[in-house]
Image (cartoon, rainbow, N blue to C red):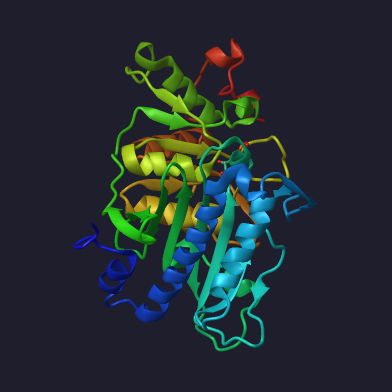
Length: 359
Ligand code: F6P
């Protein structure tokens, strides 16, 4: 029985009241939701869909594409290109922005997405997701690359879908972060998690510790203190998680708090981080802030990073506000040379905080 429940369409009519171009924005979010339902159906079929495994191509980042990446990308492009709502689109899977085909009218928004985040997890039946960001494009001309390069704080809407045991759509239009669960029987997203709120404190952190030797000192300091638990600086025990699917980590944080880090490291000195600014970090940062959390590079608020490239990478530290603020403080102290001597149990006597180690 679904009478009385708030569907996505009803929610959008109420939530978008007072926002410029509310009807168009609402319609675009409904298009995105339709694409998400199609991707959800494909991922739920698993190996039966015949879409598992890799294709021969690589994406712009040199990563071998999964079949589902390519299909999910196509579903989002096709669902959104025709209705006169978007002026252009950009995706993790495509080098250049996607122009709207000439037979369709152009709209006032730019849609940017990662069609299937964490797609290597699809083959092992672990949650994957779709992340999207919506920006304004107020000129009648077709967008140029620089029209896409807006700071995250310019986003008018952002969200993700998570394809897990249930499919959920979590979104914000700048009035809180709200979660909807797909009711497969009626084909509707139903508001199940209104006003999601991240607790300011947490006892859980997520980071890929196989990269520990490449981290900067402030991240070492934070993780080492968490690992020391009640016997160390923090005086309490911490738990660690790593799913390797950002959407799943972020979803956990929105539900019960925590910190997620893919920080700056020296693994590949040409890359300032692993995650992509425009279709991973920025939309997720908006959702996190709208839920009362904090999202940072360690040295700057993520929503204030000015993009210089469509596929630019960025360090990401986000989640429970007090913990993220602590990690930011560790960066400030380190950069000022104030973090003092430090001996990491991970690295025995080799202090990463000694001035000579900072180089
Ligand atoms: O950017 C894609 C992504 O799969 C994220 O969803 C995830 O957080 C990260 O990469 C996992 O990286 P790694 O394989 O280094 O753990």
